[in-house]
Structure formats: structure tokens, C-alpha cells
Image 1 (cartoon, helix red, strand yellow):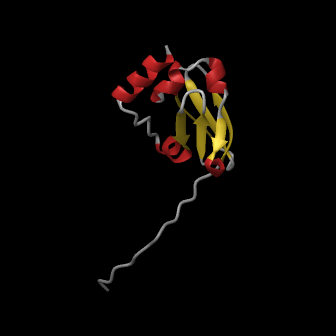
Image 2 (cartoon, rainbow, N blue to C red):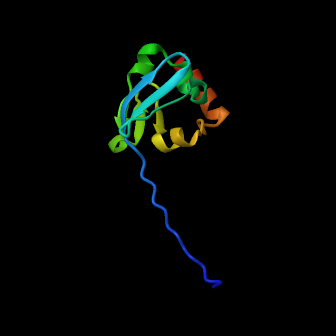
Length: 101
């Protein structure tokens, strides 16, 4: 009995139903009842945004993404659940920051 068994696991992401951003935290309420919070510092554009800019968030991608039009920031639910901070390069962020002035 040295046969190999193959198992396929299909994961489905829960959709975002609500978003809140404070000076230190990005929190998402998910359709499965969980609330997941991550440090706002993981997303420099959010951290440098004004409260009004951070409050102007759209649930996008059929509930699997978040978009801040004033900050040109997009964050996926998958990244939040996996604990992945922004992958924006420091050069890109600096260019964005300078353009805000």
C-alpha cells in the first residue's frame, strides 16, 4: 500500500461587509462573522491619509477587495487574512507622498 493519495482543498474567501479605519487599525467585518484587524502601518498610504480620506472606502471586487479612491489604495481580503502588509516599493510610496504636497 505505497499508493499516493491526492487531496484537493478549495478555500473560499469570505466577503467584506463593513470596514473601519482608525489612526492605528484597519478592521474588516466579514460575512462569516469574523472581524479581522491589522495595523494601519502595514499600509503607508492609509497611515498618511486624513481621517476623511480613510473614511472614503469602497468595498470592491464583489466584496473581496477594498478601494480608497482619494489615496489610490487597493487592499484585498486575502492579503488581510494572510497577514500580508503592503507590497508597494519605498520609491513608489515616496513618489506618491511627494505628489500629495
